[in-house]
Amino acid sequence: MGLIVQKFGGSSVADADKIRNVARIITETYRRGHSVVAVLSAQGDTTDDLIAKAAEINPNGSKREMDMLLSTGEQISCSLCAMAIEAMGYPVISLTGWQAGVRTNSAYSNARIKRVAPERILAELDKKCIVIVTGFQGINKYDDITTLGRGGSDTSAVALAASLHADLCQIYTDVDGVYTADPRHVEGAKKLDEITFDEMLELATLGAQVLHNRSVEMAKRYNVNLEVLSSFSGNPGTKVKEVVKNVEKMHV
Ligand code: ADP
Ligand code: ASP
Ligand code: MG
Image (tube, rainbow, N blue to C red; front, side, top):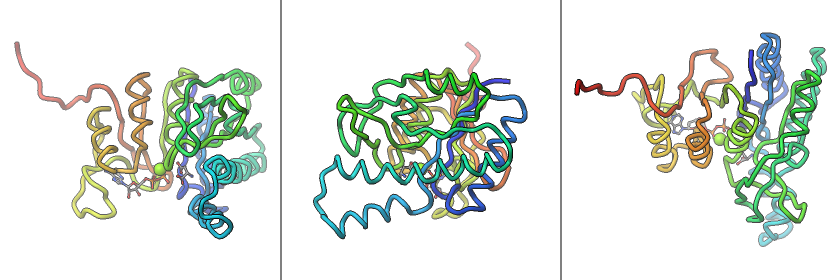
């Protein structure tokens, strides 16, 4: 039994059935006796749709107002998922980035997490609640909502896992784990059972969006026990860690 942070990306929460599937994964983890903090992205293409909506009104809208707008996508998926979990009869609460204590700098649209004040989450976990947190967002020193850059929910999840000293941070997505190349575009790409933080950082920096590169940097820095897996298949995923088992060994 421990504390597990589970992050679900946009494709994992794209419609009502998928939200119910995510609710099932979360509640199964909870039923096994774990404390669960789930971090959700906006549903499907919601963030792109919101950007398009803004462009219809003002293609040069300020970054502050864009953050105000884009942060709403995650609020929708989190409240819906909390309602799905309520319907299953479990105690649950959804929290925005600021309610969850995610403090960032003021770089609107590409903010960095400076610290997480975990008191509210810990209080809810103490009450045996499942906690659902909006990914991709925080609050700055002016009490303005900020967003972390596209794909930033991975970083939200890892930051929460680090600050809560979680036993495990699971990144649920639409592929079975990390592959040698994008499995949607490269035939014959192989799934890796494990990968080091440094190798993952290289892949992420080269554009493998399966993990936001800042999430990998943060996981390495705070030694977060990280795993990438599918929310659909139930197959074992990829462990991302400091040292992998199958490295070349020398007798010295
Ligand atoms: P989510 O919405 O769950 O955050 P993303 O779309 O951000 O998911 O990331 C998952 C996608 O990353 C996969 O669908 C896959 O096409 C892509 N991808 C790119 N490179 C890789 C890789 N090396 N291994 C796995 N997936 C990869
Ligand atoms: N919803 C945000 C995006 O589409 C954040 C995320 O999905 O991680 O970029
Ligand atoms: Mg992503």
